[in-house]
Each structure stands twice: as C-alpha cells, then as structure tokens.
Length: 124
Length: 368
Image (cartoon, rainbow over all chains, first blue to last red):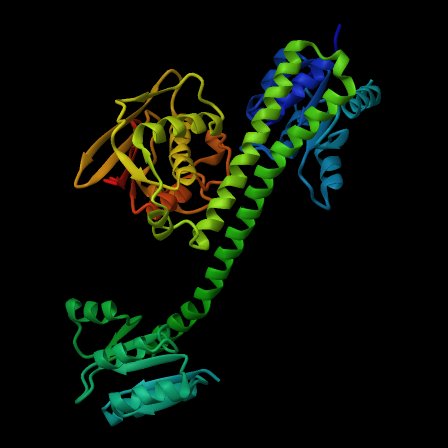
C-alpha cells in the first residue's frame, strides 16, 4: 500500500502543489487548508506521515504539532515541518513542539521523499 | 527641568500656583497678562501652559489661538483656569484646542493631577505613534515578503520537479503543475503592477493632469470587459461566481490611463468575486448623472461591519484576513481609490453585514 501523507498548509497553491508532487513520487496525499481540521482528519484517514506548515491562522504548526503529540491517535505519527518561516530559534521550537524534522520551502521531490523515509524509520 | 508657563492676571492666584509648581520641582515661568504670556511661550518653549480665561485685553481664548497657530507650540499641553463651570463654556475652550480645564476655586491636588495627566499624555503620544508606525512597517514587510515568496516558492517547486522528472509526470499532474505556475506568475504580476502604480501615483506620473494631457479615452464597455478579464486572473476563487454586466455602453467614453483604470476596476471586481458565496452573481450596473458615468459593483458576500468600513481604505489592511484566506497585500481598495481619484473620479463603499457590499465608482464622461 502507498504511504499516506497528511499535508496541512493554509496556502491553497502550496497545498495543491505538495499534493501533486507527492502523487508524482508515489505517495498518497491527504490535504487540508485548515489546521483546526487536521487532528480529526488524521484520526479518520490514519496517515503514515504528517507534513505541517508553520505560519497558519487560528492554529499554527507549532501548536498543532504539540496537540498531535498529546492526542492518542496522532501521538506516534512522524511529523515534518515544511515551512518558509525563518527564525533563529526555529530548531529549538521544532524540538519543543515534538516534530521529527524540518524542511524549508521550496522543497523538491527528492528532499520530500528522503525526509519521509527518514522520519518513518525514526518512528518505526 | 520641566518648564511650565502660568498666565494669570490675579497676582495672588499666580503666586500660589508658582509656589506649588516650585515645590513639585517644576521650573515655573510667570506672565501677568496674555500678551506677555504669548511672548514667553516663544521665548521659553514651556512643556505645559496654564492659562486663565478671563483676563483684560487678551483673554485666554486668544492666547490659545496664538499658541496653537505657531507650529512650535501647536501641540504644547494647554490647561485653562476658569471660574465658570458651565459646559458650553468649557466645550468652546476644548474645541479651540485646550487639553483640559481646572475650575476656580481649585485645590492644588486638582491642578497637580491635571498637570501630570497632561504631561504624561503628551510624552506618551509620540511613543504610541512610533509604535504604530513600527507595527505598520512590520506588517508591510510580512505581507510583501509573504506575497512575493509564496508564488516564487511555487514556481521553484514546479520547475524543479518538471525538469528532474518530466518523463514520470502524467498529463493530468503536468497540467496542474502548469496551472500552479501560471497562478504564481499572475500573483507576482499583480504585486509588481501594484508597485508600479503606487510609484506612478507618488511621483505624479499618474495624475489627472497627465491623463487629461494624453487625451487617451476608452469606451465604458471596453473598459469593463478588460477589467472583468483581469479580475478573473486576480481572483483566487471565482469559477462558480458569475459577473453580470447589466448592459453594454458602446458610446460613453472616459479619459483614462487605460492600464491603471483597468487595474483599479479589476481589483474591485476581484474583491467582489473573492467574497461572493458559491453560485452567486456579481452585478455590475451603470448609469449617467450630472456629467458623470456611475458604475456599481454589487456582491452578495458577507459584508463589512460598519466599524471596519473606514479601515478598508487603509493600505495593508485586510479585513478578516485569516477567516477569508485572502491573498494579496491589502492594497486593492486603497490603490483603486487613488487611481480612480487620479481620474477625477470618486469611489464609495456601502455594505450591509449578511447582505453584501456595493462599490460605486463615478468617472467624468469624456465628450471629446
């Protein structure tokens, strides 16, 4: 079965693009623009990996990641931040939020594929 | 030391205030009439002025007017001393630009409180202003970098996968990649166009004088058709919303910098599209009155609450950005208004929450 990847990004174009790229390299994407829907979607769709944008309205990626780590259905999921957000403390905040890896946009197909394999191996 | 000027013709009261100010550690300056007071304002630039109203020759109001008309003292805190406590009397002083008043007889505690309140506010005011500017700059930088970066990121990602894996990409996915590329380029194009028009407006290259001089005109129907086309490209969601052009007017012409005016109307139309519910209409109608052609753009969107209506014309504001998933840098409405005003036109916004928003544009008819 294909690896199922949940993608959460509030930019419609970026979300769509990540979906198409994941399809091309053989993953099965599940997408949402709304970070508030992400946990329910993860529980329903049972993805193997989660890609989270950071700068999102209502609930940002750091907060969403922390919530996922506290929620039984998502606690053990491999989570990757995929972001254009830059700050000096971003690595510390990634660790604090409990995400496994951080990729900077623009990401390419090889980077995505390698990162997905890497975090799945870490959580296996 | 903080200088405080006291203008009071009654010797006893003036002496008492001076003494109190010295005890408080201020540097008091005394004036026994209005004319001397005004001179001392210029000479000493006090941090605050306390002034009696009822004085012979030059009364307190006249002092205030003179103080306010000099840019150097236009913002100096000004406290009136008055024996008359009726409201209309006080309001008159406040309208002229006084900051506060203390009624006689007063206790030192009352005067002291008024002085500290005014001095504190005066010191705080510029700080607030700076903070506001700092915040505005920060917002601008965030918006611009977001609006430039997001489409650039898309373009980079598309070209990367297309170049590396062209043979692997099925037609459907290739089409979607190209559409993303197109939208990214359009989004960048819009920001670039906005920037160009702002520069032209700021340098007066886009102004009624230059437009009138060029004498280039366009028919209303050509203008609207071109604007609708551009609006479709600006709008990030619109396929389910139709634009209904009431009638075609092939005769009426307006003087125009066509690119700029088309851009202005397209910004307004794309706003209407973006805020419209699915399967609704945006209705564009037109009529003539008083030598002007009036265009109305009516949507059935959520409307703008009255308290946000004024803000809509401020640059870099996005009403409910988060809720509406808006794109752009919040320049559409303010820029449109400036472009339309450069065409000697007007733009007004009416909105009813829950019903929709109507933008009305008036442009002078060109009789050429």
